[in-house]
Image (cartoon, rainbow, N blue to C red):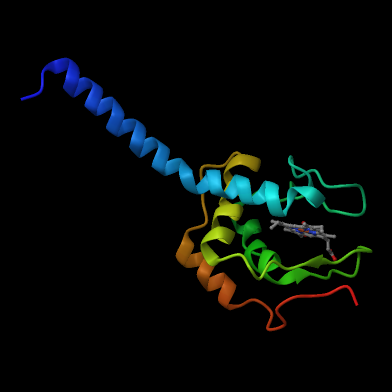
Length: 134
Ligand code: HEC
């Protein structure tokens, strides 16, 4: 039987472990965002003038639902001079984590896009896998 001090420490340890686990996915989303997106859209997602759009315009979870396909397939919206290439190497889970990092930490929302929904959205991406610059 553990004494009180030991069991208190064990409880704190377990709570810390659970808390850390809950945050891992957004930690991964943050790392992936900084590695794959921030060069163009900036760490704070404010973008670069007319070249790289800000990602801060979305203000509801619904507005984030086009992002999984944009990450996977890229986007060629003719109103800007530059196209965005897709990232076909990122898995569904990684894409889900990037989107949720954006929702949580950039939008300061406690909502999230759940993996099954992200997977469904990804099934409906344009057939053409990536755009290229030619
Ligand atoms: C090499 C530069 C570059 C990188 C890296 C990049 N993007 Fe983009 N992104 C662009 C450009 C340029 C556009 C605008 C393309 C267009 O509209 O034709 C864009 C557009 C977007 C849009 C649509 C903007 C809007 O509000 O309609 C989203 C969302 C987006 N990017 C998310 C991301 C995410 C998430 C990542 C990282 C996985 C990423 N981008 C990486 C250049 C980049």
